[in-house]
Image 1 (cartoon, rainbow, N blue to C red):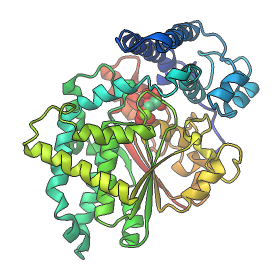
Image 2 (image 1 turned 180 degrees about the vertical axis):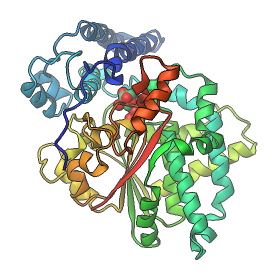
Image 3 (image 1 turned 90 degrees about the vertical axis):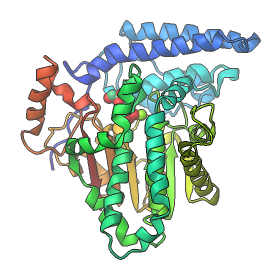
Image 4 (image 1 turned 180 degrees about the horizontal axis):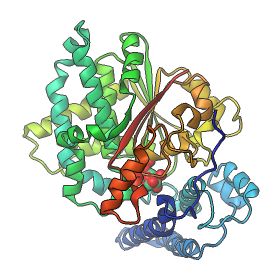
Length: 460
Ligand code: F6P
Ligand code: MG
């Protein structure tokens, strides 16, 4: 096997990571400052709530400046660790990486640390403990996804009565075609990531969420292991099979994941789905437990999606939301959370060897799953350790212990960061040249454009 590459850093010249740390993070924090300012301007913001909110706002302003001034990343205080339940893994990292600054630190660690620091500010103010600073952005972007949401609901409505007969038909060909379609729905659902899409117009969102867009995007899936996942699940059809989703973003992506999940349940390719959500607001748009409930409410709320309640579109939304609710009540869809998903450890730690931060526990549990689907870009970065692998490195080498510790996994990722493995010789260079033409000086950023994707499978 190849030797282990070092991780990407925020000072790797010309990388998307460098651009993210220097330019995108200050914007993300500024957006949070704007959002809390708006919250504080509401009539309902009074008394201690207002006072505590003002403290958070000032902290955010200071924090943004810390980033711009490239000061060293500090450890969490004992008080912070205790009150805000910060996993000690953060401070352990900082103990072994003394003096790292925002512009000279591993990208993966610093990005996760960034969101944890924000969360701590809220946790320290009792009346703001459960305030999700990214909620209003998550909600408004989902609202803007109406077109894609309805299109998928109509597709679901047209198929639902046929699922049974399709699943029972001995000719598995149609089922496999649909499986592929629903996997792609879930894959491209990841293209709507709020940390990248903050400036997207309604038309932009439309253009990446429709069926036509998906078809045109097939050639953009550079590695496609869908068949391997299909072979795994079809063998188990009708038995007690379980599929897990390590979720990524709420709103449209979660909605797309629910489409795939209910397809698997209706066709008995799985009879239990477990969703793994985040325990803190994370990476702007990631799913928290409460976001699952919010999504189901949004789908039924005609003042949220402003459509005629007597229209077929409205019936299609109701049908889907009711079915998901039913699966959830019956226990066929379960949503869980664990602090492991928001700590700084990469997924090489989803292994019996990691005994302090739930890596071993989760690994043991995921051994009971027949397929663990890791959604999105950040999960891919954590799977591969966000390392500077040669792009031709094999997937098995890049995921380390996960290639041989018993978990069967599928990564569905639209490519939004520098790390990428498993490519044939020359493809990275070819696409870099192509991208360079329209983006002079930034050819390698084809890998952070979100326009290409990979579907990677592993099993042992
Ligand atoms: O790489 C850009 C980025 O926005 C990172 O901040 C983060 O790793 C990732 O994309 C988030 O994307 P996703 O929601 O797909 O994990
Ligand atoms: Mg995300």
